[in-house]
Image (cartoon, rainbow over all chains, first blue to last red; front, side, top):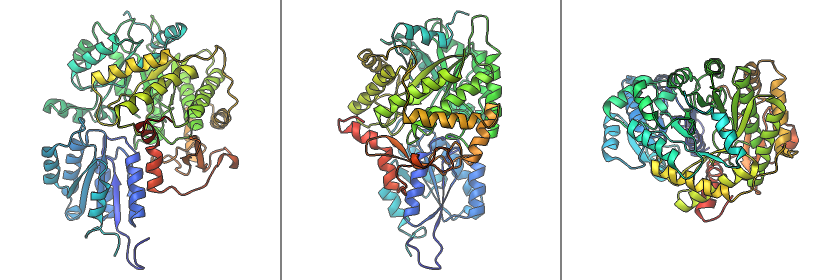
Length: 145
Length: 417
């Protein structure tokens, strides 16, 4: 799409969390990222931590996007990023999370801080497509070269 | 044990001309769960109770459920396998009885641990299905889900007798909640109901989730009833309607209007039971008060609607024709419904639009037409013929978002579907 000939498209691994059964957030993110010129692998809902880690080590994506809307995003996302960051191959990979991360519908500053401290590069509010796109437009995960 | 079989309770309400309304309610705290059940029972409506389980229990990650309880983390449902049985008996004691059946709702493709737990507590009504709880919500291979659900059905069926009639509801009428053409919802519900019956259940319910066109929804419920009548023989069955399962209105008024439309649809289509959604749905896990408000609003709206005359519905609709074709294409594959379902999905004879599961063909695509009806953009290998395809088109992220939020937009701006 936007990439120059010979320039590989930035690759993105999109995934839900181990306990989250929601799909539409993942289908939407895939279409959005493809339209922005990214090549997407979508693991779908309820991806166990080991599957996300194994896929990431195998595919070596430029970006890993974790999306969760079932209210367990804080717990599951925290555990997942620790598994991912434990692999030296993924130490420098951009990893972000977003969605409805708690059960009460409120943004919890402490939980966001814990997610960032555990290894996420960014934590996005539910529906904040603009901030997500701004991040993608900057290196090292920009689609347009 | 003094309890009314779930199916018998619903049939009794129907005979009196009353819609049964039911929440989707689950809390990890036993005190709050008990309060939720008590207030469901006390609501000004004919209600049945619900224990909705948490996601960790659903995916059988019982270690995570145990840790969460130990650390005081709030779960998104009731961890029935983790709280000690005496705790759950305390939740149910004096509330679950002949006038108030309680159903366990979960979402597990491998539900044996849940079925064992609920049977151990004297409960015997639950829901799900090998397709409807596998493809949309898991990465469990479909073949494994079929084996697990066979076992679960047999575990439930063993408890038939001595006044007990275990009940199983197919979740087939939901399939990703939105954008699945009704013929597939009807077909999966009927096929899962047959699967349950072949594995010993004597009482089942078939589901259908409110979609984007009231007229198409009426046709779908009529098709479901007609196919159930044709295929389920002497098994006790009823239809349960789900209030809209897609992106829900943000506004309180919009949310309640959508729920009331579902309640009227339930009555006018001849469904016997309604699972409600709350005005808080779009924002958080609903509270007990949110649920009671929804139950009472639904019951009031249902009382204003008129039920169809008794007897089989006139169902010569597009939905009935497509659903009947799908059901028979699957049943013709094998005598065993589970085996037939596996073959059907492998060949794409059943295909859920946008479903990411590795065992779903993923070739079929749907869209919402100008008149609000869900139609096929691509039928993939579905045995529906070219006429079923209304408009081949590539769906963009903006199209998808617009389709997913169509009902929210309509109701939030004061309109209806």
